[in-house]
Length: 87
Image (cartoon, rainbow, N blue to C red; front, side):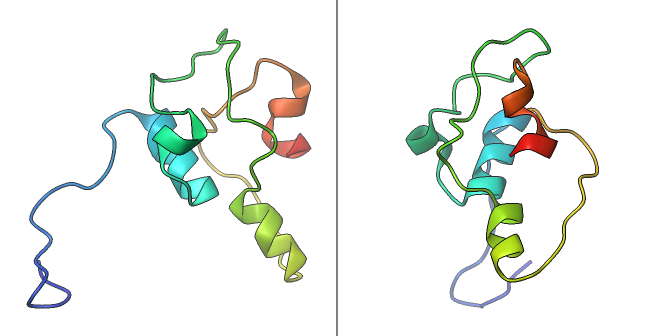
């Protein structure tokens, strides 16, 4: 599939695990930069995406959009402050 003939998209340009991919999508930052490239966050994982990163819903809220969460979170949930409703 080619969006622009000079630049064919012939490979997958994402991480295989869900945590790095989700972190990149929600922050706009490469997972290596955010520290989210190592592994998938499990239910008892103590590490997470740093709360200092602003997420897409936060940017959209500044533009008067409302947001809802559907699907998996997997960027940290060890404490309540890391859950989607507190971000």
